[in-house]
Length: 426
View 1 (spheres, rainbow, N blue to C red):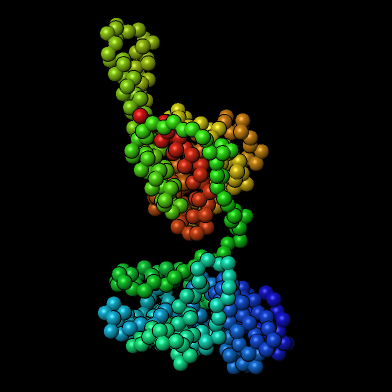
View 2: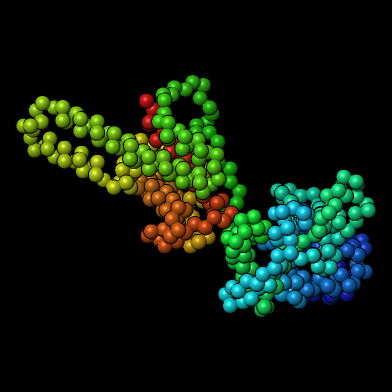
């Protein structure tokens, strides 16, 4: 945090700066500027250095970057920024003045849609958008509350937006010290119960806070399978189900994509292994000498029937071992070696041991890749799909941090699924 402010102003902001350590505080001429109040650098708040009442009032405000809100520390109240509502709109009218009490974890919360507080309107009046590389717009509702306080200065087209509308924010007042509350947990429960009783109830937006685990943030998947695109290709008809699963996976979010790619493995385990065994069994049964075959031939037949009755995991491993070339997988791991040689701890408690060691080479990979790769795929898939992973009793929660990690595994499982697809050519 950069502090370049007069000592008297700094002294008057003591509690504010202690509570809001993510906010940069500086001066620009006669202005006091608060940078990244909601965690992103595309919005700032500025006021005159002589605006002592506003500056003093900030000491009772906490800007929690997880929410588009201000938190009134002196009132134990969160004021979530909402929007301007048309009372004649049937959907909006149902919650325009809604109020209810939530009893949760031994605490009472008074929840209601109300006119914005004077404190919030004062903050809104002093906000400005800042050019930024951050995607999207933090607190996108805020400009409307700022413009509503200077309607006479707006063009006629902008004025029409406010016609017949009233401003509303959603407030949650706690019966205990708000600093002792898990606000994100509270917001999630509020979203759940509100939607349970009203399917179009407004939802509290919860932003994931930045994690200190940033070493895997930047990632670009390996582009080419080889050094360049081939000049000639030969391709037969690929199994339609496999083709569609891969197509959907390529265009799905990370969690769903991983599951779709894994379904290719499941499908291959059921279909290709069974087809292979069926074909071999037909060959045996068509052999005229089968009735008088020796012990060796009988042993081969028993082995074949045993393979057909293997469980799903065994069948999936078998098809991967039969059709996947580990040399094609290795470049994806080498491209992201720091990631795959690190232990991964997911939100939800799921822990994944390193897939490779830091000194793993292409040769050592070819000797150890199975069944370890398949086992990791299966553990990830189970923790994504099952409420509780059967063996681990851990889950991979749908958080941004977890999704970024699943993305790193997609190039690897995609290569496996694609090789299975190529093996399915008719």
